Structure formats: C-alpha cells, structure tokens
Amino acid sequence: MLIEYLFECSDMEVIPKSLMKALSLVNTRNVDHKVFPREAVEQETKCILNVSAQVKEIFWQYIPDNDAYMEDSDDDDGENCSLFDNEEFVNRDSRLQNIKLQAT
Image: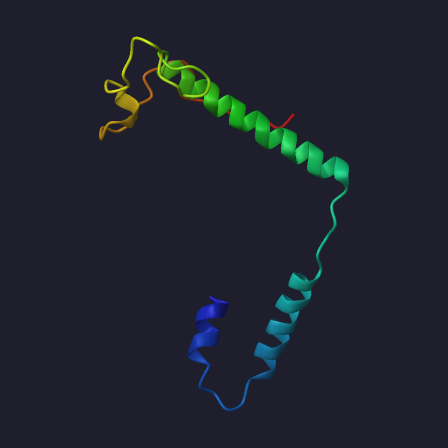
C-alpha cells in the first residue's frame, strides 16, 4: 500500500511530513541487520534439511521404481511415471492428508 501511495505522490512538489516520517521509520527498520549466532543458523539449517527429507520421503512413496536420486531402475524407462505427466498430482494415501511438520 505504501508503494502504491508513493507512485501516486511521485509528481508532488511538496512531500507531506507524515510521508517523510513513515519513510524514515521504514528505512530505520531496514537498516538494522541482525547477525545471527552460529547456533541459530545451524538449528535453522537442520530444520530446513529435516523438512526437505520429509518431503522427499512422501514423494518416494509415490514413485517406488526410482531410487533416492531419482535415477530410473534398470527395468523402467521412466515413461510411465504418472507424477510427471500432465495430470494433477492426487494424494492417494489417506495417512498423508493431515501431515503437520514440527520444528525439532
């Protein structure tokens, strides 16, 4: 909303004080860059990798003919994989309908 207002006011000769105050507030908040401790970065990285592994595991359940690196098995040429066709991916396993991921 602020950006739209700024574009509308771009041709103004006099800038209202309220707009200047709002911009200074936004600028002061953007200038403060926090340096996160190494432990916080490592914990966040572990959480991201954990979610990534969980998502991979869910997809592996639907593509049993492929290994962990999505390479085709010897007897499969990959042409019959329904996940990558133009049809919509449908959750066929009722166990996966209410998955809630939690940070550890």
